Length: 373
Image 1 (cartoon, rainbow, N blue to C red):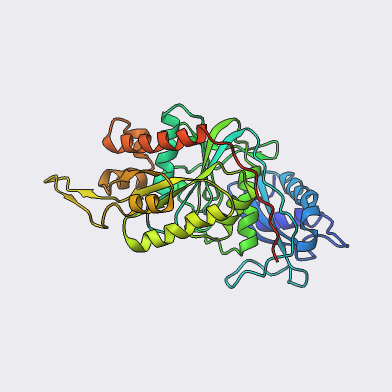
Image 2 (cartoon, helix red, strand yellow):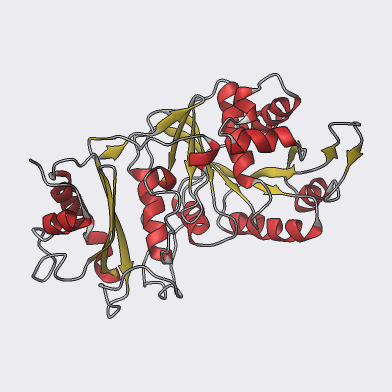
């Protein structure tokens, strides 16, 4: 009878993998964060930053060692690099991230088969960015474009709930197969890790995980991959902006001044790394009472349009604050896909059409060279 798949059995398998400079990867403290769930295994491989570029074969060897265990459906080894002298055995935990390692030009993340990659970003949370990203992707698919959706929010993935995904992605040929919903090919770390599992990871771990979600997924041929970024201007955003051939970024904001200030920061970040800003969407732009039809501008109105004009970028459209949008998002039935004849679905299609018009005339720019001083 086969032994159950456990953290101990995973570590036992990994103890057969030789570590650089002697010993094995487990004894040397290079393995941490082992997660085993339903045949899906995930763990961290910590290496010296100076050797990071040469450690990819070791990462693959670790994955192969675990894949040989009975009952394993998929394996994902996330490689993270810390400075020499940082204890490799220290497990992910709260606290500041280590100082960035000294690198030359960063290696570009290539994703073959994808014509355009579009980042959906916001300067702060709570503006409906993920809801907009999902419905934008569904609207692009409704317009006939082969579309993918990547949930790049490592700390707070929302796609499992917003797309009602409970199954785990299958693995074939060393790559994860995207989960298909509403004509979209989708992937999220939330498909692999339990919903209530806290991702207490340092910056380099987040960057490594995001790179693998881009590179190690069998996306196939796509016209556009929509990437839902976490709010702010942190590691995930910089990884996408600096190391991926982005065709452009869409900024989500609400009308009020405080949200527009943060949206401006996100827009300026993309411009500084030569990523075109395709435009701004004003979400929660107004509210229409379902009982009396009276329109109320709860968060103000027109701020994003004025900001787009001031910054010289396109205003993509206004999305109202409406119960139907909220309910369909929470239920995993995005309104742009499940209620195509609704007024709100029409709004998302118009935004998607404006985005695609810009993509159709744009050529993806090469990722800039990065030197961390």
